[in-house]
Length: 534
Image (cartoon, rainbow, N blue to C red; front, side, top):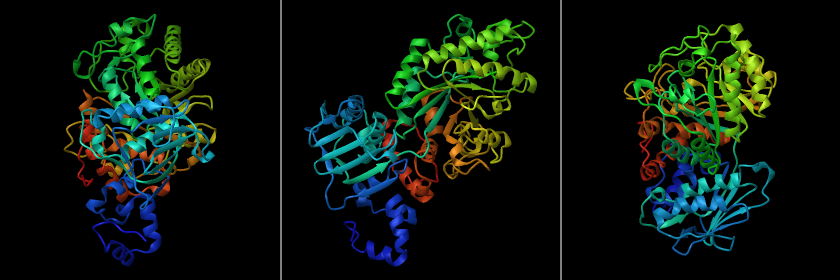
């Protein structure tokens, strides 16, 4: 038997309108929203169990045991190896609650973060979260799993807990149990810092925002025709000249090696691995303008501040090209402890196909020599990459022979279909930012596709994961980033994390609406899509 206070006839009404199997599904994966109904306004605390984004694998609320409330006496217990996650959680909760929330060795009561045995199906990023009157326990095999559980715990608290200033409580966590783990290993966001430069502070802000939705990769597009954004020793003009501008003629900028290492560390503390990209052999005008010798005619082109693509190419037959590329790859590999280096390969319209293949056949061994796995836009699969190399699909049609043939040969594929996952595309014809070459992309467009079955003849076993690219031709600051990323980024995050059995638009739009007050407390300048019942 179950009921919701203030709604004594709700159970009988639902039983009379829906079959038992559908009611059980609704309670398991999304509450009343799955049935196209709104939850009663006075059921908000319990319903937070059903408002988590991405949707957990299993949610079992305890309607009889009573939840836990944070107080000024609450402590955060952390087992050995879990203290970093504990300090992260305390850093989120202290400003809004005003509580000390010391991080101590595990003890009964309070919030406990425990590393230990969990079911093998949870893998390295899964977790178990249990709440009763005595406290909250998050248990996982690894600190990455604990971090995932902490992101869910944040969403079980009122949205105002995300505020950076003290707020009024109470700080209640609903009772129950969540068991959760990701569908795909790679759940990425991409930020183009080349078309417009974003400072380390702005990048960190985006890292904090995407971490809440269990994104675990941040792909940084570090170079393009409009700007070069990373210090490379031995090639100082890349930053002296190539970094000096951006789309529209602004001042541009770049990251020193120390700043980039700091970004890598900051992201790693939030279970996010940085994936650096230097696009090549096209999209290279900033490098060509910096070094005349990289051009076939030995003449440096002018810096470029427009938005056209496909007009630049490294000189394939010059040996200095490969000296340059090797230096860049080696130094990026040294800066990046993660397993991936992205080497571009898209829109190389000024490079002939034989030259394109010749170029990558020389570059792939350079990446392998660093111990990294190459990632590239799916066009680079035309060359002969090692089977460890990942192809990133960005097409707009669900059929691509190059991708399916590569998968059949053993390659993993990262999915970013432009008409679904490119979150720089306009929401509709009235969107003041973004582009529209791939079509308008509302929230339902971003959500309503299955990565495991989207590309024809591509088996789910070949899918590494999903990524939401955010190109910055029209974006100049954090407000612009947030307006385009939210609420669509959480849609892509759910596709990457949640089992397909939980996929339901009615549930998602209701859960997404519940994120609105949280984003307001975080200061996120999100787009209030008319599709979402904010």
